[in-house]
Length: 296
Image (cartoon, helix red, strand yellow):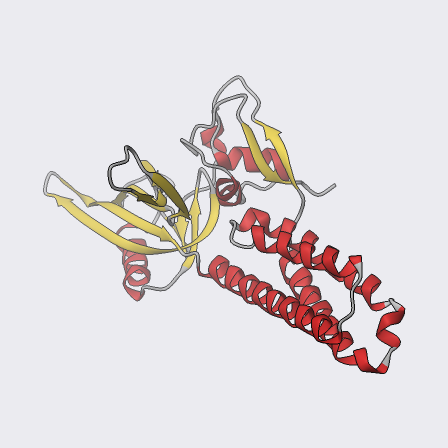
């Protein structure tokens, strides 16, 4: 019995279906800046595209262990495809992801009248991740704006302290990592936590007890509040990232890596998002992966 024999069945919504072949595709968005009279160019990496999953499926009424597959299950699936809605897609070698159907080609053969063959394509729905990143971007922008307000307030009040410069530098460090991918959420949360702690130290300075410096104190409180919201939102559900070396002796699909790490084979897409995998269906022994640390 191979590792593939223990994988989940493919499913979309509430309906399982047989897959005889599976192809997974993805690519990197990039733009190459070229300059006159200069060889080559400068690549700008813009993040990955959405994953796509292409199944070859035999929908035949005489398949063992697949009662009602044709035409009943196929009709139900076709209804889901046509709705354009996002549902849970179980990809046997990866796990469960949010996806929607983009194309379904059906072919009938008069020599085999027990059903039809289908080519079905699904695309990952990254809306949830996009909305999370949008929220973090908004929280970060509010923190940068509060930093600017604080700098202006202390300049107007003509007060100086080395902690002010350190606080501004902490926000600058945060600004340098704000545009990175989701695996940097934890780093954003840590940086924001450092800003919150520094705001507490700065707020304890006697200079803010002077009535004329209350505007600067209010600006500091705005920065503290913005950084606190960023820290909490960026840290939600985030776990430390660690390394995992794929054991041998044979290549294994990402779903099996997920199962070994978390005792849950459905977190394969999470691993794929953290790593540029040449083939998520056959990760070579000795490959070092970035993964979220398993629960203790």
